[in-house]
Length: 343
Image (cartoon, rainbow, N blue to C red; front, side, top):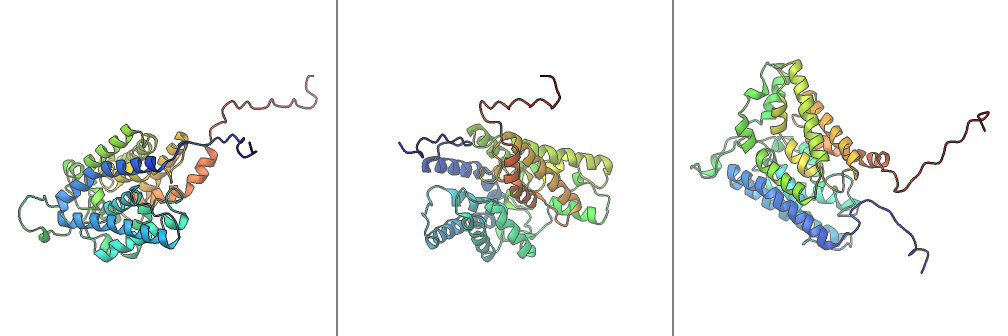
């Protein structure tokens, strides 16, 4: 036996990684996201369906082309590109122009994934890289929201009107120092069910929670990041509400409005870009929560989930470094006796 074969390597899980395991995880995530995607189609109809279809197909095609260009194995059946495309679509408004969606696919796969070496090598969540790029580059298109309309409510699907999101109205009230409570902007049932303007994945909290619980049941994510992230946002949001209840909304508003549920369950928990240990994941979730609330209440954007997760993605290597568990069987050496001490 060679010296290389005699090496005993200790690493974090998963210890066995096969194409089948990756494929199973990715398609399970697609199934978990399906309820939210279907609810968005119910409320936004054709506008949502074409955004989802074009984003998924665009990401798959871009990944295949870039893999050939970089002379890497082309793997489409594993579902990784489908998951990325679906997450990107859920971060876009209904009725986004086709050219913007395709640019988002190119940036998401090219700059968010392939430049780092492909699947499992990326530092930042690819879908959020694409979303933030589009938000900064095309702010008008990325903040033009269609008012929801039930699919079978009658009337042509093209007569949907634009409207402001609950977070957008909250931010306008804060900037104008106008005493309007977020709780009065829309009803809790509308926000929970998805009958509000917003990105496709910012709508139905119920559908997203069902998908997240499914992933928890399958063991593909743990409670550490979602609970810490949502809990931190809720506590901070409620504290500011107590300080100025006429201006700042309650914790429940912060939880149901915007992309917090989508981000906490499906993007902050990304296995590649989040910390490996439970302690590290709690730190990660806490950081995401603090940054999200600061941006929502005091920043220039109504929503802070995307920026919060990307910033904490950058901190993940540092978190991993300082939360490494003790080696199994490790016994610290005895402290040396101080000079002049007892023999």
